[in-house]
Image (cartoon, rainbow, N blue to C red; front, side, top):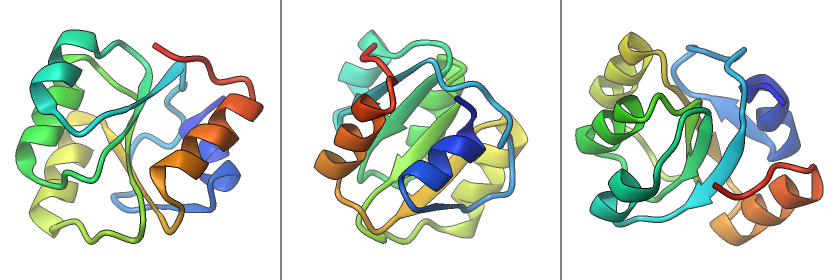
Length: 112
């Protein structure tokens, strides 16, 4: 599945216009950056309520496909621009993390 296909699945918008064709290999939901640093992987779709620049640094470190921001949480343009520069798509959706995970699991996206 691509990031663009995932966006349709979870009723999300691509917030930074980048990397919509990245392949999504697995999903993960966590808000503790150090935990994600230890458990992140290539091609991951990471769900988090965190919206600061360090999220993009962690996503880039693991070459993740995208970061998903749930519940309509706003993301500063500077963060979106940095994500685009790093080739990390940022998706925003009104769904909560629980529903996002359920939809991804139903569609066959496995855990990390």
